[in-house]
Amino acid sequence: MKAVFNTARGTARDTLALKEVDLPSPGAGEVLVAMRASGVNPSDVKLRSGAQGPMIDDQVLVHNDGAGVIEAVGKGVGPARVGQRVWMYNINRSADGLGQGPLGTATQYAIIPAHLAVELPEEASFEAGACLGVPAMTAHRALMWAGPVAGRTVLVTGGAGAVGHSAIQIAKAKGARVIATVSNDIKAEIAREAGADEVLNYKATPLLDQLLDLVGNGGIDHVVDVDIAAHMEIYPQILKINGSVGAYASASNLTPALPFYPLAFRNIQLQPVFVYSMSDAAKAEAIKDINALLTSGQLSPRIDRRFALEDIAVAHETVEAGSLLGNAVVTL
Image 1 (cartoon, one colour):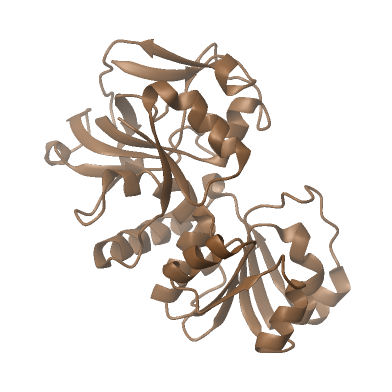
Image 2: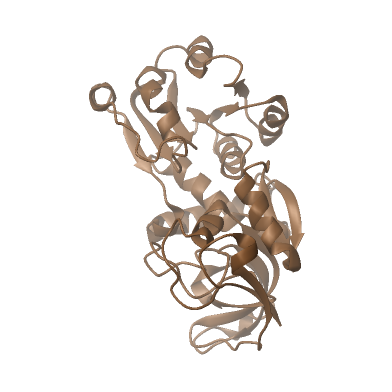
C-alpha cells in the first residue's frame, strides 16, 4: 500500500516521501481503516515544518484528520464495526495532545485507535468527514465553551476560513445571531452562504466602527476569534459584561499584550483553544453535536481544493500559502 511519511523537519518537497509499505494489522483496541480522504490542516503543515517540535522518529505518517471504512478490528473491538464509515481526530498526536504521535491518515490503510474513529453519518461524504477533526471540533469548542449561544449575538472573525465557516454553521444551528468578518467580497459571499446574518469587510472600514454602528457598545455576547492579537483591544468595547471569547489562533502576534483592567472591569472571559488537548468531555460534546448537524444537513464543511496522494507536497504548499477559502483534502 502507499503511505506518506515525514522524514525530517523542513519544506514539503524535501521532507514528504510517498512510499510502498506492507499492509498493517490492527492491535488490541485498534481498527484498520481503508482511507477515502485525508484532511490537510495548518497544524499538519506547522508540525512538518518544525514549528511544533522535533521529529519523534526517522519517519512518521502525516495528518490528523481523515475518513474511510473500517476493514478489520483488533482484540477488544466489536466485530460489528467492520464495514462502518468513520471519521477520525487527533490521530497524529500524542495522548496528551501536546506532541506528535506515530500514526497518520495520509495512507491507503490506516491503523486507528478505535475510540478515535467516530461513525460518519450516511448524509456526509468522506471528504466532509476529513474536515471535522481539527476545523469543526475547533469551531465547536471556540463557540460553545462558555455555554449555549441560542438567542445570543456571536462574532466570528475570519468567517470564510475552514474553522470560521464551520463556526458560522454551528452557531446558526444553535440559534445564535451571527456577525462574520472577512477581507473581500468573495469571502463575504462564502460567509453569507454559511448562514451569517451580517458580514463585515474589515479591510473597507475599521472593524470597531462597523460593529459599534451595527450593534452598539457592548452588543456582542461571544467572539470566535481567528486572531486574538488583532482584536484584543476592542473586546472591552464590543463585548457585553460577562461576555466571552474562544480564540484558536493569534497569527498577527504570537505573544499579544493583555489589556487586563479593561477586560476585568467587564468580567470578559478568554479561552484559548487547542483542539488536540481539549478535555474528553469537550471532545464528546463536539462529536455529538457535529454528527447531529451532519445528519440534519446543518453542517457542511467547505472544500476548496482536492489533491491526489502523489501531490501531497503541493497540498502542503497550498495550505502554507494561506490562500484557500475552506479546506484542503487528499483523496485516496
